[in-house]
Image (cartoon, rainbow, N blue to C red; front, side, top):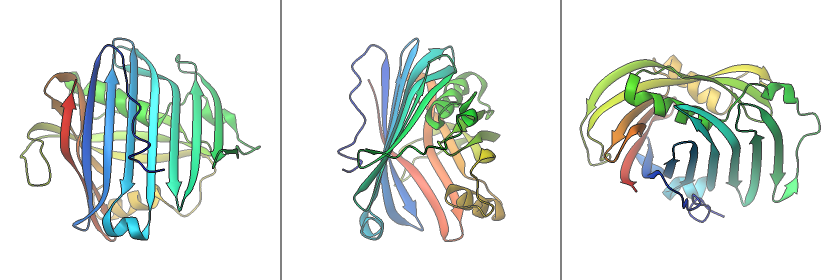
Length: 261
């Protein structure tokens, strides 16, 4: 299973769909490809993200992932019905499914490994109260951008083991110029993004994303996302560029193609 074979499911419904592709560079090396699909109707949404390692990194760390959220819309507010994630590492697939009622209430969580139910018996579902998922939280910000052009996201997210605040802040508006790496040109709003641990099974020493986040903080910059508008879809700002500073160099994600239908 790869991110290509596990691509976003076709969405056959009224409304508009934005499909964007990205190249991710780490230390100047093409390390990953990603694809984002955003479908929006008057009262529904469907967001899907796929990614997989490329080139030399793929040989060293063959990873792919698929993440998808569906839910209800009320204005710019997102109320998830489901969030699914599937990560493939060394031929093994770990999947997580989160269910919600579409009215801001959490319903259930399930984890499988290669199709076998591995949901922990000691899951503290009280950690899920009042939470959303990471894609729905990001879409909420993307829907507020066209009117406000302000980074003001602060949503509580549950990942199965713990919860955290996904915080967008530090608004900067600038004009981006298209390059050999990135096709986007025009006004963009840049936001720093921070994961703020709340409750649950957090380690004392930062690991994974938290470790990368703190490396950037120590270098004077939290992970930064630039959001911009696409022709034909003015009511949603989408990620057009990402920069993450680490101890091993700077990672960039560049927009390489876009289509609105």
